[in-house]
Length: 237
Image (tube, rainbow, N blue to C red; front, top):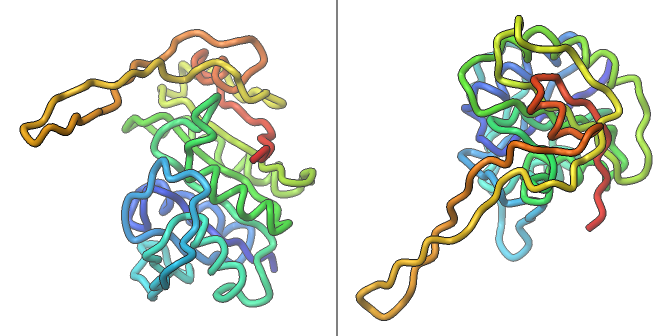
């Protein structure tokens, strides 16, 4: 039986990881090692100079071996694959992230960072993300179908499958677009708000707006047009 390690960056209590684990049970034995809280945008960070605590966790899906981790998502993959899952996992699934991981945002994403850590360990990996919305009709319709297809499809060195679901009603979704390239367009146009502080310091806080244009054939263009985007992302770091 396949052994599937699941992690995320939204935390072990997130709805997305619950739904991903539930779907994954149809494809193998499921192990969850996920952060104990929010770890978004930490990219491929790992903990090197201090210990990382891991403990058994209550998980709302029966039959799942679940552990919470005090470290980063990439730590979860490292510890999960080397110390927790017996004999190494056959696959790593990362997500389902609350928010797209497309275009330039992939470089910041800890969903992608955890997936790339698994790819670095030569583990077949799929990252799943969806629009930061409360409607999951498209994800629910296509998740298992795409999982069944991609779990059998090989990847090259340091590559992951990257899947993004639009947060629209199913009736508005145009279906699934495969072979989407990672867009070089900015997903967000951002800048910093500058606030002088009483102690002489200056505080900078990022503020961004969505960029609503993208090149044809890309992941960003697909989700903007309300299609599911499936493509390969390669770790170039």
